[in-house]
Image (tube, rainbow, N blue to C red; front, side, top):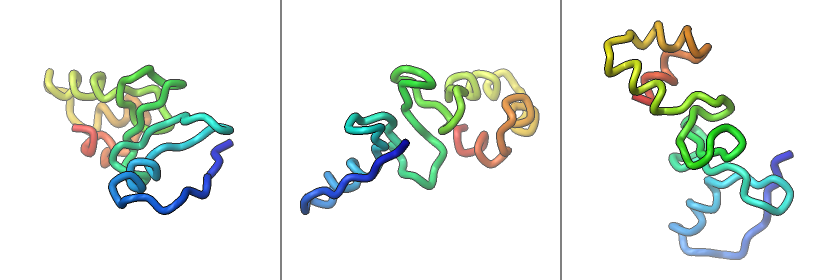
Length: 91
């Protein structure tokens, strides 16, 4: 369960970073470094310290390596059951 906390007034930079973190009970559970509108997450439950597509265990590295060797975006998306736009965002 994701819990939102009320925070005191903070400088904008600090507020933006805090808003990118999802909490599970009282602990930080997931970091969304680009914001909640972009499917990029650092989620210890999916992959420790490695950026993944939010809500999946698919790492950016896996997508990037397949693209580097010539796989088409549509093929990668279908293989990982992702939207093509998500794969394009990762690349």
